[in-house]
Amino acid sequence: MEAARRLREAKSKDKRELSEAVRLNWRLWTIFQSSMLEPDCPWPVDLRGNILSLADFIDKRSVALLSKPDPEGVEVLVNINLQIGGGLLAEPPQSHDTQSQAPVPGRVNQVL
Image 1 (spheres, rainbow, N blue to C red):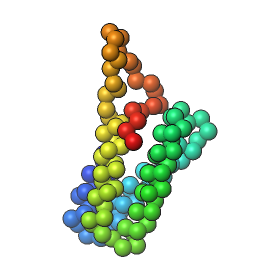
Image 2: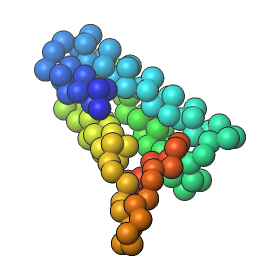
Image 3: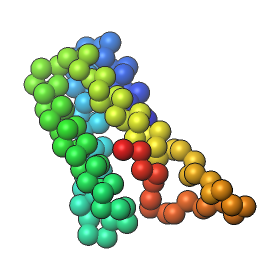
């Protein structure tokens, strides 16, 4: 969410600040990418694949934005971050029976 905020704010500032925000976001997604490739990653394989696909897209978009800063081209990165961040912050769904489901450590709701 913080990376999305910084990207959005940098859109209306100079190219240096936009580049800094893009680099910060890219580093964050590189960490996600690395985590998904760890052999002991507890996330389901299909979810890891989705995150890796997004990370690949982020890599390509970041390179393009760093080579040719385009404030309007940043919005797709903002939207991805907001969607993923919203999924990570979401409450787990409640079961229909009287017992509530506790969140499982290391797992998130699949939002993709």
